Length: 158
Image (cartoon, rainbow, N blue to C red; front, side, top):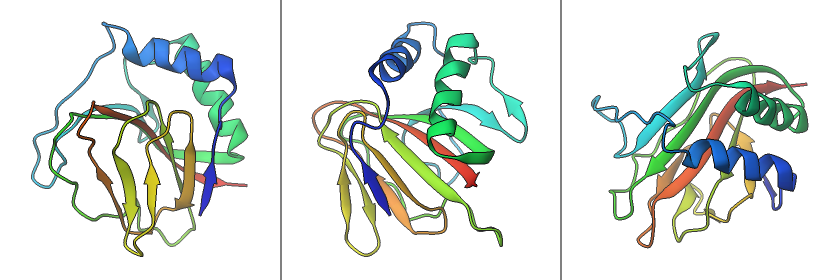
């Protein structure tokens, strides 16, 4: 597991925030069984980009995936968890025979965190990334002070 403070360059994190905080950025509330209480935008999944993708957001994602040395992307998702929401269920992002990674980038400061089964907690500090094997059990713990915003990228690395 790697914890990377100040992960993105100032321009990239600023533009990413501008895009995601925009009043026209589409949020979806999945209501499927087992889904956490949060709003999401699945920016990329199954070889398709969401309608929210635009050239500026694409440039940000390209900068991030280059920094991660990603050779293929499985999924890119933005999560907005309301303050006071229930804790997520323990889960893994992917169970594949080929090793793959998860990168969680915290998009705002709040008192929520990512918790791993071994008890390790990564605080939600803006522009910090945590990179780990996608088969590690973890969960998002919502904040009590403001909504928790994260960018979650699942990928294969070089």
